[in-house]
Amino acid sequence: MTIAPYHSILYGPIRSRRFGISLGINLTPTPRQGCGTDCLYCKTAYAPSVPIVSRAHILPSAGLIVTNAARRIIEIQKAGEKIEGVTLSGTGDPTLHPNLLEISENLRDLKNKWFPKAKLNLLSPSEALVCPELRAVCAVFDRAVFTFDWGTAKTYEAFRPKATLDYKTLVDRFQPLDRWSAEATFVQGALDNSNDREVLAWIKKMEELRPKDAYILTMPGKGKGGVKPVNTAKLEEIAAKLVEKTGIPGHVIAREAQPV
Image (cartoon, rainbow, N blue to C red):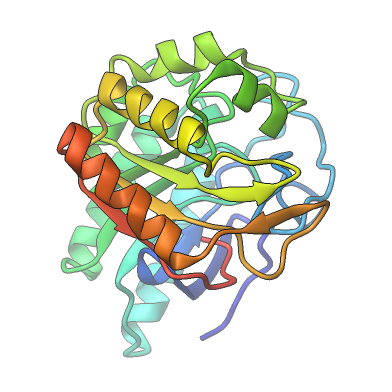
């Protein structure tokens, strides 16, 4: 498999923890490699990117994204390769793109034509959630996954000190959604959202927001900046508590250093 740079519009196909062999579509590419999300436990190396002044600033057009994706999807199919998913993800929040719904619908049609058994996935770090049609966008995807690690405003501010959204605004933007999955990365050490108090606060927020399910994972490697991963047994315990208290299924994802 040929892997394009992570900061380009297309990357992969790559093997990911959640989505199998997946072609990545990056709606918010930047000139520098690395993720623009300032999460201290992030699964990819953080590198400052060009600031997005507005939703339309320096973003590739819908036509450019869909044309490139179509070319690559057809190329993969004609080469006899298999993909299990087409995933919108990358160096920023896909919900920043002003034409997210149009792009999503076109990608769904392409996937259905060339790889009908593959899943269409959205992976958002929940930086912005500014798309006014986000509820409709979620309905297009087989799996629309949004980061939500924080049970309280205090935890959110500690984990995302440079966030542009305050916690209440972020929570409010989730309220209209009904077809989405939460992704929660639990860690310990200098930052800790895995202790009993934090886990219960997170579960309470899940009960309020009602995602259809939750992906529960930890950071790869040995950690950095005093932040450390938790063991699988702890993740299984969190998943069990989530189901017990809310009925929301929790899927524990094994540690694997992949960008998606």
